[in-house]
Image 1 (cartoon, rainbow, N blue to C red):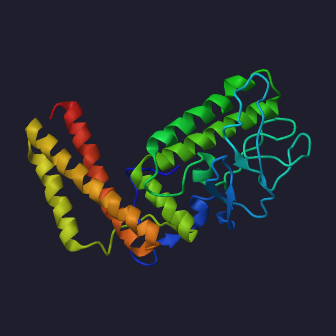
Image 2 (cartoon, one colour):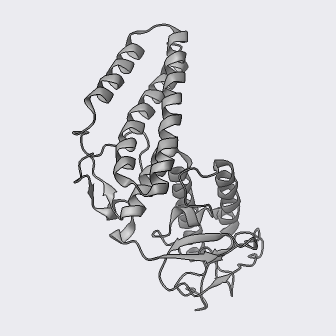
Image 3 (cartoon, helix red, strand yellow):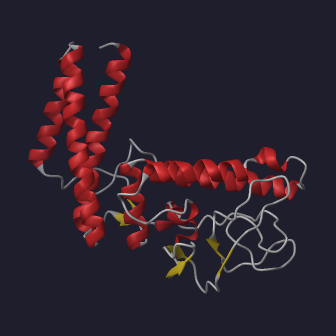
Length: 268
């Protein structure tokens, strides 16, 4: 699981290592783009040799997955041997074993962009959880119950990662370059920036005024909003070096934002 508010990573060029920390087996497969909606919108999938697109019918007693069109992955159904989709077999409708190398954006059926629609993301998440919830499989085989729990957990992990800007940015950098971010110190961070962060932290620690705490919170949110826009631009341009620097700044301000929330909750 990616930890949102306690990320530590190097800003030097050696800060990327060990992709398997975040991506099982440390492998990213070729990017394939397939049209998978009636609208013709394409969705990317990190899979090799994707043969086509199909729909998954409703499992008896479950919500239909017809609205969740997914690319057929290069695997066979564990029960009937037919080509299987991401969640269910297209032939026998049996739930499949999750593939933890699947792109989180594909799991939640959203465009692979930093400025994604979080409302659509949440809607997709809730729809999937209704279909995959283990309670729906209480009368099924032990293997189906196990796979439903694992699929549900994977969807949860994907949603938590993509829901927040900071963890979403980290994930996008990871899948862009095929590596993770090394935990460490921000050795090359701009001294002026570090001084600004230190001053904000000191102001927050010293003030006993609810209004001042709220003002600091508003200022930090504005900074995060600006950093989010810069991050979106950098990722769209493929400027990973700048994106890496912005991640460090987002981490610091996100930490301050959490401190502000704690102070407000505690009533200063």
